[in-house]
Image 1 (cartoon, rainbow, N blue to C red):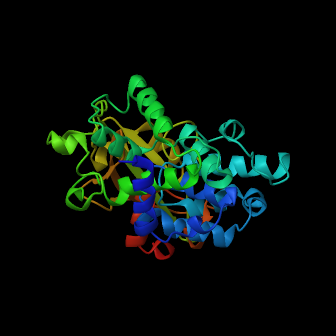
Image 2 (image 1 turned 180 degrees about the vertical axis):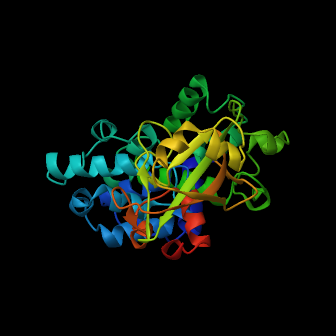
Length: 350
């Protein structure tokens, strides 16, 4: 069986109608690939359409304020992607006159672009014969060839890249790479793969050995960290509240949130008011009244940590110096955890 020919034939009959497949413009391909990293197409497609509508060219994206970019990205998660996206847009627009590098090596130098993304853009936009390896590709190849090398090990990364390169259709790398990824998404799915109708079901080694459910192999992640967030939702007679921007290299860098007190364990109201120095500093001379919004902590799960969040309403006499109008709060880019809270309350009339 000719693996490449069979795969591409399947793709031409089964591929989804997606907007970035109707162009070879590297801007569109780059945007879609960055957005779809660690994101399902069903979730990422509406964001892609919003970005293309708002920023039809790399110049439009480069000239946009970062807060606007982050606001449009809000909900997609992994926000470093959005910051890198904006930085790369500026670099391409201002340093390269809007022209993306035309080969894998040049693309790889762009911020936020790794081996997979550079390979995808190079092959799809320029038909350069470089193999892509993403989660879908790992799954298809590990099953078809019955490979149990962990895909997130150094050895596994090298082995699967070499195998994908060996299989690559060098005359049509664009179609081959897209076909391999699409095959993993639609046919060789993580759960309940469609083996009965698979064009490779006779030659698939994992199917023959009854190991489909065991592959691919992945080294387990480290222990999940629990964090306890106490958000202070200030309100005043002037309909003003407080927001602060997250700094540093932690989660949600660049997004906005209510003043935060992070504690090592879940705490009660008396502990917030009486024993917390940070709270006393935030509320100094404001004559405040405190009440708890949610008795049960809201659990927000991230890949390596679980956030246990409580929201505390803090009524203050005035916030004239550093407050913002409650009408403006929904204009700021915020984490999903904060957005869900805002969807539940009437922030403008606290």
